[in-house]
Amino acid sequence: MSDFSFHYHLKSEDQQAAVQLLQNASVRGYVFPPVNGWVTFVVEDELSSDVPASNKGILIEMFRTNDFPAWGFSIYQEDKLICKYKLEGEDGEIPNFKDYSKEAINKIVPADKVDEIESLLNSWETESGSETADYGFARIVGLEHIDWVSFHYVESDFETYVEQYGNLITV
Image 1 (cartoon, rainbow, N blue to C red):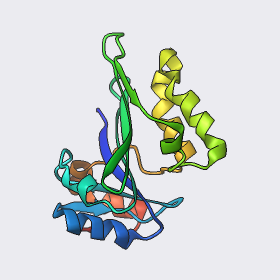
Image 2: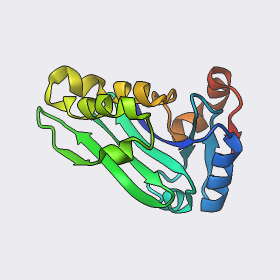
Image 3: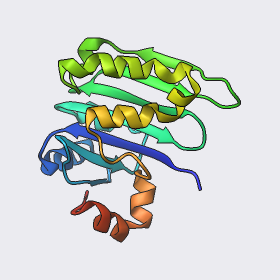
């Protein structure tokens, strides 16, 4: 079975901050409890620009799949896109989009981790890098919820997600 996950991570220790963001954006979603200074949430309309437009802090939008090398993230500071990285490949071809700076990466990790993230973002050139870069990124940043996390997964098996992750808030 394929995992295609699409999720947001708000830099906050307050689950209610993400609830407020979804309410301001007028979108349905599920909000996970905070872990490592990040509140993960998923939204029904994954392509809605209302979420970043309503953001008042530091927000990561991330997608990943286990079918083939494909993952990416965008970083927003308030409603402004400050960083984007996207890697998608199939049949041996890996087109890549990178628009990031060390200053933007430093918004999500301490200064001593910026070079480690930058090295990881360039690791797609190796076969093993393309398979593990999404997990490495999540580990360095402190994102816990990246596997099998998207609105339709949570909605279809809500009780299992509550058992696994704790108090999910429905918006």
